[in-house]
Image (cartoon, rainbow, N blue to C red; front, side, top):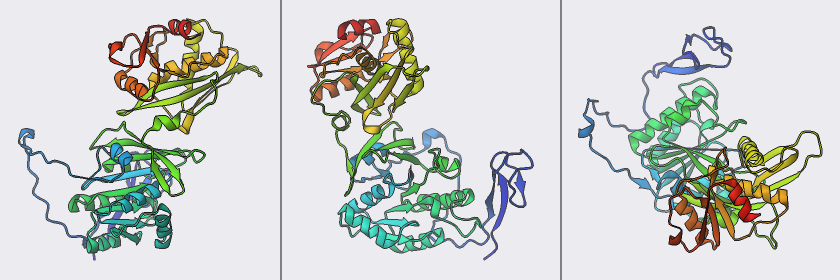
Amino acid sequence: MAKTKTSFFCQNCGSQTAQWMGQCKNCGEWNTIVEEVLDKGDEKKSWKSEPSAKASIQNIKDVSEMGETRINTLNEELNRVLGGGIVNGSVVLVGGEPGVGKSTLMLQVALHLTTTKTLYVSGEESASQIKLRAERIGIQSDQCFVLTETNTQKIFKHAQEIQPQLMVIDSIQTLHTQYVESSPGSISQIRETTAELIKYAKETNIPIVLIGHITKEGVIAGPKILEHMVDVVLQFEGDRNHIYRLLRSQKNRFGSTSELGIYEMQGSGLREVKNPSEVLISKKDENLSGNAIAATLEGIRPMLIEIQALVSSAVYGTPQRSATGFDTKRLNMLLAVLEKRAGFQLGAKDVFLNITGGIRVDDPAIDLAVICAILSSNMDVSLPDNCLFAGEVGLSGEIRAVNRVEQRILEAEKLGYDVIFVSKYNKIKTSDYQIRVETIGKVGDLVKILF
């Protein structure tokens, strides 16, 4: 076989060098030079591929549509995030912190697919370790095959023998190809092995799921181009101090990127949470001040979440502003609105805010619930336990309309709430719902009604 030709390129400016250097001489950036393959020589392909058709220019009107076929993962939460299942020939990247449950989730999916031949390739664990996890999950399958290998050429050779319908790679940072001399996990190895896997997936129409590590900054380890190369990027989030795990879509060429899947980590694996509103709202024996319920949306999924606030006198000179699961800058803005538009003196008080369940919410429709929780704690008056809120608060103190308010109202109605406060600028018929819909226009109006 002819020798593979490689060279070194700067990831920042693109200049080429004959050897690796710590600093690029052209642009002056550090640690940006990586090895790239120029020519693989007489590469002997380890899988059969048909000769590609000659490319030609086509008018977009003449291009024939091809319906995408998907593999049903038998996991409703994963299907929702993917947009209906795994598309044949696609490459899905699942990233997350160590121990969050990425390998457990994908092994669970592989074991559930009793009619789909699945090849689970592990470069981190032995076959006996995977067997122990499978026994803990408690699912038996004769269509799940395990391979412990890190060389991509050998993986393709084994895959050609058993002809799987789905491949899972755990993890992409452990793989290496013989055409790049650098160590596994390096930028050049990750990019080259991913490129080989994508080419294999497209030529054989076999979908591949890649499990990826993340850095301490929370981004997927490796070059940023890795996320551009694959078809779908999923982020698996969760605090090890909480039992709930969130699966978010950051990129999806075959569906929406605003969907959310919720799981509960148990000893027997990950359990799908069908109704997140019930688990995100804590059960209380008595009404306490500082608690408010908000109606939010994640993609097309309505959820009710509990917001807790604590307002106390500042012991030290500078008052503290702390928020868990909510943007601190937005909290400061809402406090300024309360002080300027509603006349509450909160400048000398500590304000702590928490969204229960360990989740993070960016929906501006929870502003109204945040304000009510803060005022409830400040005045030490509990809110009625049968009411909830859905509205965005503007800088002038007005309650702004939110999108898809009908879904939020129906979710509150389904869970047995009696009244929901929304903006009067939402054009809805309040008589269409069994729940009482209160429409308000200003923060001051809401204060008069509740307090």
